[in-house]
Image (cartoon, rainbow, N blue to C red; front, side, top):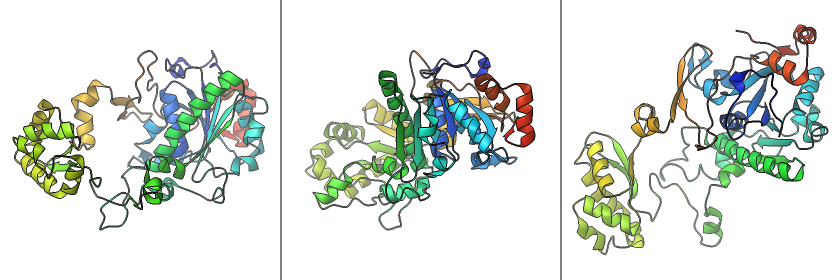
Amino acid sequence: MTMQSDREDTAHQSTGPLTGVRVLEMGSFIAGPFAGQLLGDYGADVIKIEPPDEGDPMRHWGVTKDGDSLWWPAIARNKRSVALDLRQPRARDIVRRLAEQCDVVIENFRPGRLDEWGLGYAELSRNNPKLVMVHISGFGQTGPLAGQAGFGSVGEAMGGIRYTTGSPDRPPARAGISLGDALASVFGVIGTLSALLAARETGKGQEVDVAIYEAVAALMESTMADYELGGVIRSRSGSVLPGVAPSNVYPTADNAEVVIAANADSVFARLCKAMGKPELASDPRFATHAARGQHMEELDRLVAEWTSTMPCPEVLKVLEQHAVPAGRIFTAPDMLTDPHYLARDMVQRVTSVQGWEVPMTGIVPRFTETPGAIRHPGPRLGQHTDEVLRSLLGMDDAELAELHQAGLIAGDRA
């Protein structure tokens, strides 16, 4: 694995498990950049290529403050920004040279675009045979749909999760987050780490092909077999899974909502004791998993009647005493103040380049010996252009000045 240059600023050094791994991120929006965020969290040196004019659109996406995204400090954290105009042949030559100094390239352009620019895997790996190149796209690099644009929402639809999300009497719903993009990123990271391990053993890199729709489909459990062998098409079922009870959302006296998951026989018996109705555990309507599924509505009504008599903290306390899995449905204010979140450093506050103290989620997963870290927030556009080109490619002031003058690169605009 390529070791970081001694000339790098110490602010970019890390102690994470991927310390010494260098990643070149080419792409925008979410699917590619979130994968880069995760690798950076684990210690990799992530060099992000951005167009010099406006940079990654994520700089202005989502909820904004003074025109700047509140998401950007997190999704671009631990990255170095190099502003480079890939439309220019000389700029693409710089990318080829940078790739020689990297272990991984992540990209989420439409399939074929990098090949058109002479930046495909065959070209980038020519002088770096151990290079791992991770492609994240809507439909993958092959197949009849490969060339089509495919956003996360389309991947969620074709991957099957949209059809199973929402209430049965309404059209398919979506989660309030970019689920398809995030899943593709996670699979991209898994593929990256697997390919790096193989490269260490064989001395040969490879391409990793992640399709968003496939990342979603991979989570769809046995839905294919359910249909082909069981004749069942899983559909929308609201807040429950058919045949699994009690496992639902229940109201409390203080207008909160708790999820209780007590569908296993032993757990259900403990829930019955917590409710003061131990006899329900042996009631023929509820004594077995199958019976509880058949009488789901009646059972949910009984549980809801009980939870409605107490405020949420009391409900959770009683359930904890009886070892029944349960949790309040959280919103952002709950996450920011929850003792467990705070105890596990899942709320971290980082000062952004604008001077804002931005709360963001911590590092997942946790490493006992080589902990990841948020070393710095999302950078300014082109903040590290000169630094990277000096340290990795040996460019001097005169060459950098000429590239700036020609409009091929841009530096820190702060």
